[in-house]
Image (tube, rainbow over all chains, first blue to last red; front, side):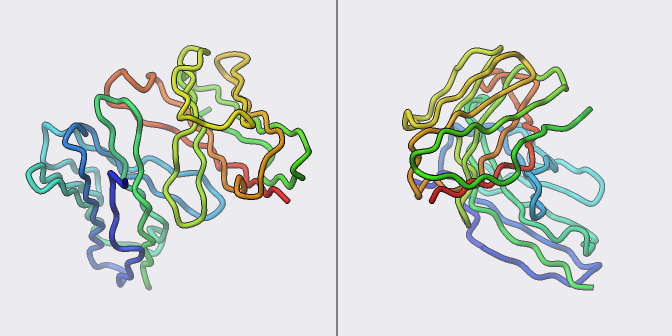
Length: 111
Length: 116
């Protein structure tokens, strides 16, 4: 049973445009959500997070939106840059207990 | 030092071999983790150590044996593995143990294991 789902295996975006990565979850006990980025031959790197008491968190070019009623979150990257090309993992936890990852979305930013 | 270092980067072993994966961090983190990742799948939690004590074992087979000699080191001892155990093994650490609120993990680059 996949509690965190990233239904788009890949996404291709032109440099300078917006990238939107989506994530759905099923466990209503999740209260903290994170996005990680992974380059080949490297471990996942923390990008941005959001608590369930918020619906938006912004950090530079990266913004995460949370829609609790729809059990959906999204990561917006604007403007997208070629260096953003990587695998993006959505992750969630319930009270900090056990981080559950989605399968990841490969983002390709074309120059 | 903001890194988690894993060795070896690549390991090939036979089903009768005994080998170990090593992980080290010097960030003062008191929680350390082992995750397993198969191709095109999400990382899956195996073990969590909190203050050098095993706090979570996700029903991992006994052919995987974790060890936390001190707060900076985490080992994963491997014995009698199967070919289906071939995967990327990721070590991570965090300031807080899993059950202490919001928790950001810092990951190592992983050890790519192939079991023949």
